Length: 285
Length: 183
Ligand SMILES: Cc1cc2nc3c(=O)[nH]c(=O)nc-3n(C[C@H](O)[C@H](O)[C@H](O)COP(=O)(O)OP(=O)(O)OC[C@H]3O[C@@H](n4cnc5c(N)ncnc54)[C@H](O)[C@@H]3O)c2cc1C
Ligand code: FES
Ligand code: FES
Image (cartoon, rainbow over all chains, first blue to last red):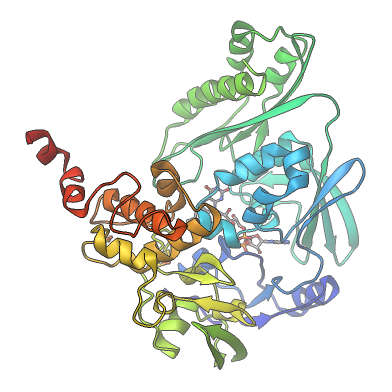
């Protein structure tokens, strides 16, 4: 199907984009890579009055080093994320998870920022951003603010990016110490969307797990941290038994949905298995 | 209407389009480039794959206005004159199609894959074309065709022999294990 008619704005600066959103009427949609928005517009599940295309806005693409963090522009495409040397060095988890998103064609268009603002529970990048304690830089009519990942994902398909706001960049703090990371995903072959996935970052010290951070994909309306597992792993011996015991707690406090792909209890089972695999691999076991 | 200028298969096109026009419809209906087809409504099948500034994209999931100022290559633009592109030739020779509906998209996705990885394994080919669905072939001969084209493009064979030295006659049998088992 063809989208319903809309007015189209093609700003070249962030200021122009904010103005175009303000002038766009009741129902304005920002267009990034279009890999989520265009499909819903084609199905007429969305029929915005105005579409504000960020494609030509300067300065939203690319990754830069900012001392204690790397900063990823909202319009950086999935394929550019996968090839970026700073991400490879400081946050390989992001590149690994992005490599599992969709297919080559979608990754050439879809953006890091778009995937995070869209906040699909089955999307892969929200749990990764949450596990890495990323910070979201949002500009809007009220100016510029920075929101921590723990406050960014508000509900199903809902983030701290309000109407009239733009996500401009995401700051990912550089981790100090020896971290290794792993994204474990379970999906149907013909559909890349995660049934459940787990993002794990683990710091080892003297044969023990000093610290672990674990993000869960599709275990509720928003991405979640597996806090109980993180606590159980802190200081634990880096052995298969200790990791397996800690990861038994991965589903605690989760509220996954039941749908065509999986029942809630099956998702909870998967969360434990995938957390064990992700942590074991990250811990080098 | 929004004015756009796009280079399509080497020719410059300046047109007015409705912003809601999908790139695939602009190509097919305004430019007559019907080699690029539409196979689904959900951005899943990849039949509509073209290259936008050298990268494979699903042209049903790009607005024509987003292609303004860009270079588009469709399946109609990959051959040089009467000489088929090595990937086109390999699909033909290795029997990489049956009904042919998925083929334009398969070929465009494969050319894109080979730009990044000139010597993919079977698994890498399968992953590389994961955004393209084929209802007919079972993919077996598509994978062979892509590897055969890769070999030819690397200059290691003349295109009649695949990297595993599978001749086209053997290919058909290999794609039907029940037949192979009886031999
Ligand atoms: C076939 C297919 C398979 C897919 N498989 C996966 C998968 O396995 N895993 C996965 O994670 N994703 C998957 N995706 C989604 C893909 O990752 C999208 O790229 C992503 O969800 C949206 O990014 P986008 O840049 O295309 O955003 P768009 O579609 O342009 O926008 C998405 C939403 O975010 C808003 N938005 C975008 N950018 C901004 C911004 N900077 N500021 C404010 N609002 C903004 C838009 O208004 C819109 O509401 C798939 C998509 C397709 C078509
Ligand atoms: S027609 Fe474009 S993906 Fe199916
Ligand atoms: S050859 Fe018929 S869909 Fe692929």
